[in-house]
Image: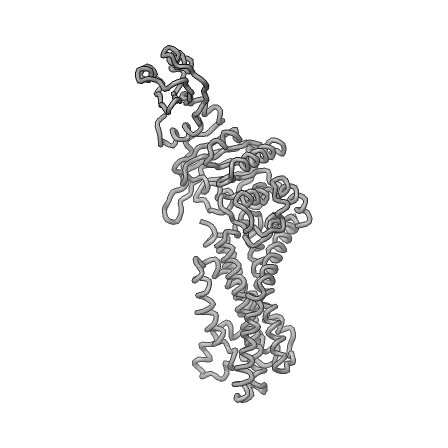
Length: 257
Length: 307
């Protein structure tokens, strides 16, 4: 009975989230595709043609996994942070909070929305990339696994950000000042192995290195990091982020006075 | 069986404001109960604690015997909430707002549809089902929130100022709907309102809350029976002279053109007042009771006015 009730509540949240995302596709799906197309043209074609091969791949081929993953994490994050913050701002979150829906179901519903948007955007960007270069998927399971884990993790981060956000500035601080630098310094445009030893060591603290590394391994078959380590670290982060989000909901931080 | 038991509930907000200072009350199943009090008295805080929107500091709440601390889901399943402020997605369609709410209670869209249709029709919103909520009038939005609060068939309905800003005709229509809901379906209703006439018209029991404390509670008719004074307005054949007013001093006369308002009670009865007016040669053309006894009671209990 509880399972059935929770399943319907989960489906309701997911349906609402995905429907909203598709309804405003010009704000959610189109911009990242346009931006990434520009990256492919400017960095991949114009600048990339002047850059030597990395690990036996053209520069265009090298940056595709990083740019796809950048779309996945940015959009997964932006989906949950904006959707949940607006639900708080408009007080529509009260519709769910007065209901018997357990907090873990609410969290699962919102992050599913984030994962769907992240993976959908990533797929579109990957589709655009195929217009610019040929890609052989070296290891499909890794592609799917790392894309899923990254979307999951950043959906959770977005939800945590939304719980704490008290105004619109609070929604954009993390993506602008944390997420973007981490992504750019996470090896989207370069191999971490090319960095001086000190910066290589610093980069190991950046979760984006493992996310991009794992995904790049799935597509190109080469990686900057150990795959088992990357998987272990990402999975641990996901569990920790989910637990933290649940705790925030349970205690009512930013949700209940 | 008690529909609701509130036991010594306290709430102190983060800023240190003590909104509830040990509130206790109980509602019998099937009751229509008014929770009255001035702005900031703690009504909405109590309702929000019951709805799961505010964390209480201490105390216990039981809904049909189920503790909201021990089994929040089971307690919430029995409650329908109609809040004071609009809290639905303004870009959502009316029907989606109602069906999604059913979904949060574990009822599929297909299962919830007949109930949604029934209540939307009863409250005159069925024709608007495919309209975005932002296009509804204020009164329609209020009715939409009532439908949304009822879609999962709760046994206990909380209405936080449901008729605020609604015109008289519509308000009376909503009263009829709520009366029927309470009488025919046995739904227990907890109502907060600033329209005291509304509470007197609809509710059997009431509790008056002021500064975070219950200052009185009981059957409305019993509480009003404790009120001795009533105001009566008399329309006279001519304006009373100064001497006549002096003669009516025990009735605290207030004159407006040819109308005279007097305060009557057991010691100074209405017939005595009319006798004195007749003695002064004044004819009483008509009379009407102009006191709102609940309002008088409310003011007295909240110590804003000595009656």
